Image (cartoon, rainbow, N blue to C red; front, side):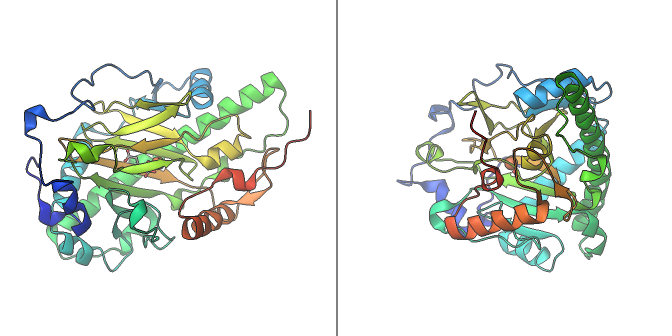
Length: 351
Ligand SMILES: O=C(O)CCC(=O)C(=O)O
Ligand SMILES: [Fe+2]
């Protein structure tokens, strides 16, 4: 969709189109440093899903907490279909999206990615808006979503297929990461790791489909954010993005752009993986910048631990994912931001 369809945007987002003076830069003299000069390859490690080498995977998880996944087995046609359906879905009128996904279990949200377990956006105030809209798709409840709309119905079918592939990939990667940790623990004689295969629960898998508006006013691009800097609360997050740059990670105290490469996926580790691995692996800090010329679409899969499963490590007090989620929701409601793992960190014994 090349034209910006203002009626499809949440009303607040329409203001970004003529900020701050109503002047929109003509296509060619826009101060666009973000992606015109992009094709420098980024230095992200690349992992082959068909040939998982424990040492290489372990290194990527330890040094980066994020990697590019190739040979993931998702058919190209499915990647194209999901992307195209996501574009069409977001291009619907704002009011239609609210009405279509207002009855659960799927939910449409905007302005923040922080939702309650039932998918309602947690209010954070106008100062703290993320310039993103999204559809929350809890995979285990997808079969309870009924629609008369043929397009939405085919989107639902695609999400089911997407969910099957991502559940498979998430399980395979998690198991491989545990194996890498075990090997490393044997080498370094860490006996305090308590990881188990059944830490994750397929039924917790969630897909988030996002659209970030294009930011036509160059002046606003540095001020507004697609998604503020954060770490994911998940065990693993697996992301597919359209050909529009925007994702950045914090690496050695610098923001580094993650390129969007056709057909590959981006995998990042979340806070639960960091805790399970006793800080051996990193939950990478990341954010999304708006693009000056194009809307960005991303489709993210998150997998979480079983709600009641106790996560033990030597660095954190034992906690369940439910404890963690409740704490995050509380912090977002009271402080306007997530604190995350530091809330659970044990005091370190003096050296
Ligand atoms: O849209 C993206 O690329 C990233 C989304 C994300 O970081 C999140 O939902 O936690
Ligand atoms: Fe994230």
